[in-house]
Image (cartoon, rainbow, N blue to C red; front, side, top):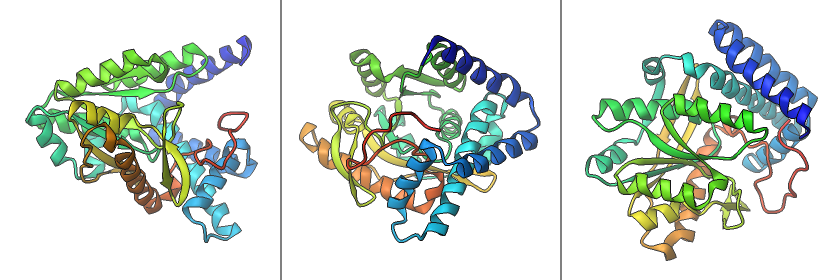
Length: 304
């Protein structure tokens, strides 16, 4: 990206946080919903990649059904961005009231006993809103509220710093994926202290991923969640986030056994199986506008 392009991107994201969060919620939602529909109709590179990915979720879908699913997918993705810009001014109590959550109690019990927990989830629904829900539930359970996570370092740097500041304002501890050993040490420290780590884990951004079967096709997923559990003895649990009408949903699955480093590949495949089941329940909420399957060549550009 050129210097002028980076300045424009920074201004655009700055306007998002400054203007969108000041709009009435209903107005902002309608604007972003319309933008999602228009983006689907324009069918840029990111939308075409989403279509190819969703074709793996519903392999028997005809062209018209896939068109509708892509349109709903882009509306869902636009909703995520609308909420991302508005979450800092949204009431956490309202998010808790509007969220249907299942399966978190074993994680809370583990943390009460001093055992760390790793929640691994795909890019689905609004994982930031789910994070706000988790933090509020931890607070109500008498646990130290907050968790650690890892994000991809964006360009320009000013945009990345805005995202980090945004997530930190929600109560997240954020590490950059390219911080390498420093990020890993931070996550290990959080887990060994009996805390929570939440990782979006359906797309490998490194050269150290694990080959898995995801949605019936070969893919690579990061080994980090299972490796952290193996190293620290933390509980590893899959989670799936989605939209539920005007609210949100988070479903936490059963703990996955990771009995040492040798069990990391099998545990990562079990995560892939859980992700497959979750994505198939709400395919329109899987915001995967990048290559994820082994047979797909990397896109020359990012999302549209």
